[in-house]
Image (cartoon, rainbow, N blue to C red; front, side, top):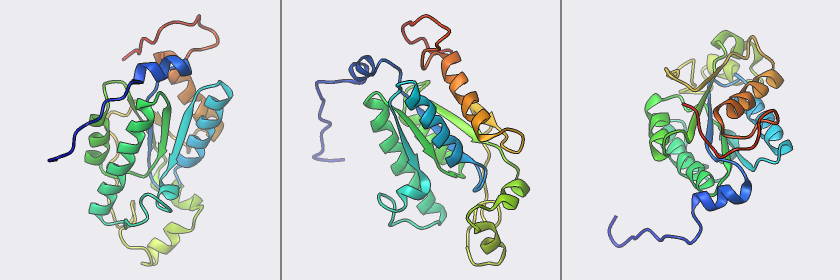
Length: 210
């Protein structure tokens, strides 16, 4: 872009991480509506807070009330929705925070584009793999019923596609696992890979395990 120059700042990502005392990364929750993304993301946010870990939570519905309230649900608008969210998530990571996002984000290409914004190991894809029939039975917002009645066009899983992750870092089936256990699984992953310190391990420098 012409006439626009990146402005460097005195404080860098590692300065913020040293100040916070932990690594930073995006936890990107993806899955069908009703799969449990927002509930698990909230539970993870709470567990991290209890451990003194700094994290921000971006929920898809919430962002559509503000930052993304000009976007609809066409394929193009969905892509822009994820693009904007990815840029915001990167800002949080650059400031030493974990950024937890809960978005259907149905297209593999869009999720990959966000991954490409970040250095290796700073994007953790969490596939909340609840089957469609389970999500539809739950239907916490009544959206599937409306979609089946033709009242909601381009509804993911019914009249619009969902491209499941092929190599997500974390896969959770909420038809088999509770919200609490799902959140604990994610915390265990972060500890095991070295993103945060386990109480069972001596504190050490960050050595992310691939």
